Length: 469
Image 1 (cartoon, rainbow, N blue to C red):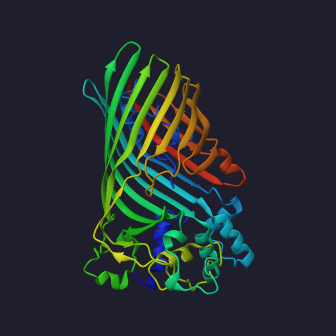
Image 2: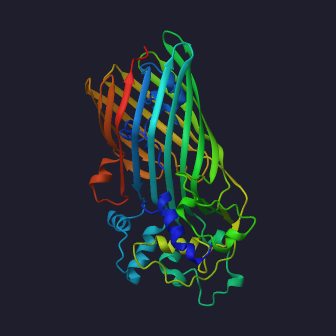
Image 3: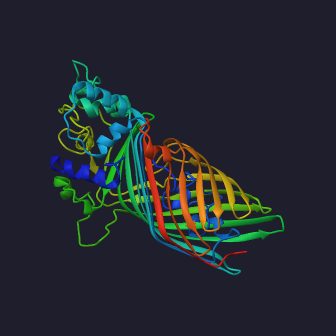
């Protein structure tokens, strides 16, 4: 990859999600978003995929459920103001003064500078078969990105060669290692296409206790990954991006060690493949209490196409003056691409295996008749790979049906890289048809407070046939 690839590298960042904002949980169905991500004891039918497959066999599920085209997106920051975030989204080209550049460096110094999640479910289906159990299938696309910068990296981004990390007598031979200079920095983005199947079965049916188990499998196509992290004295960096992003790798493409994937007319050209697994347990105690635990996204990805890696190395002096406007992505690409003004020097690699973003979920819920359900969820990340939530999620959610055809949802949530959110959602929810719109945080859409966050999720064709007694 040469200097001429900087723009393309930047576009890959944008396409994988960095151009607009670690990850939040579940945006792929509007019902879960309406409760701020609280889902472990709520989800039914195919919506249990990736959350708790044991819920496929819970009482009240539809015998057949189908959806076409559910979608969600979430964007937020824990350190920027609403005004700053808006200017970033608008690619504001106005020149920054030195005072403004220093102020932005301070604002960008955070372990949650920008976070973006996009979830889409083109189609999903679940079927309950007597005696055999419940099955579900879905296709899903996900884009997950996270930007965290320590003080040094934020200053390098906006001040360049004038960053305080460079003393007047800077000597590259005696410079510190990047793992030390960038400690706490992460530039991560992933794009996946996945196909899910799940199975749930009731294994105990007593008058006061019903127990179900479930398991899920997903085949994953990796469309792209950018993962640069410095933490605990180590630096790890690798990229693998689909040829559809049209990156010119220059001389690297002629290296026999480089597994170059060429652009073709195919709609989808993955550069990685993986296998994921979910397991879950659900209990219904009496007619009111529901309990659930699960582990999701067990497994790993293997990236092998267009793969480049970089190891720890000494700090080099940048030549740039830093980002001159709110369009900082080109500068970020210059710093992490393999050009003449890059901090990293990449080498071709054959394969790179990475764990999936494994999470543990636990929830407790109370269902009062057919009109009210309340639940509390905890979701804990079990690793720190690209695509996982950066910290534990906590949420309280509630569904209320004032009329048989109308469901209102809300709650309160915190964690997973975001501050306290007040979700809200509304759905037309008859026994046969369901459509709805929701946001993960109402105040994030309406206010100009610090730590801005905005999300929406919607679906208009969720069909249900029959009901499990």
